[in-house]
Length: 164
Image (cartoon, rainbow, N blue to C red; front, side, top):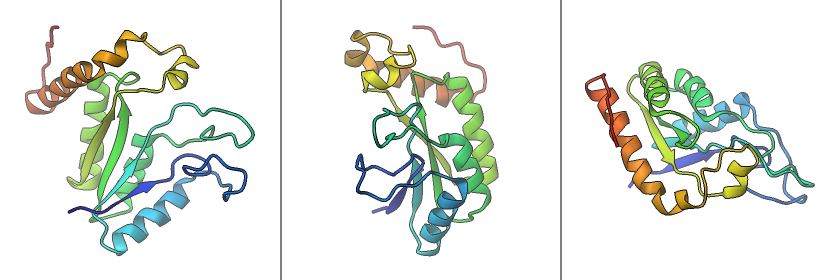
């Protein structure tokens, strides 16, 4: 069994409430949390990815740190805890994710991993003009399977000539 911490990269954490503590995400806040988790022998730290928030009175997730950049920084200031960044597969080509992950894995001394998400909240992607259409929802895991194949090929052999 592994125990981890889900780091708060978005403003006000996971609560859409004016009654919850209000805060802005910072590197220093996340560094303190992950270093404390490492001190108490947590196994991993995982960050989500949010590209845009939803506005409103609480500005829920309107202010976010970027997952890979944050986790690269945290990899440099920790020594034992596993570090996981999240990639939204609709927004990042696998070649970019492969290169960023390889770099952070080097920084961390082999403690880095990638969490892949397919994107399921249409409003989140619509507000940026990135929703590929409602048919995507039914086939998103087929796309993810191809994405993972490309990542593994890039990490394994280097060249990649994936054809659908």
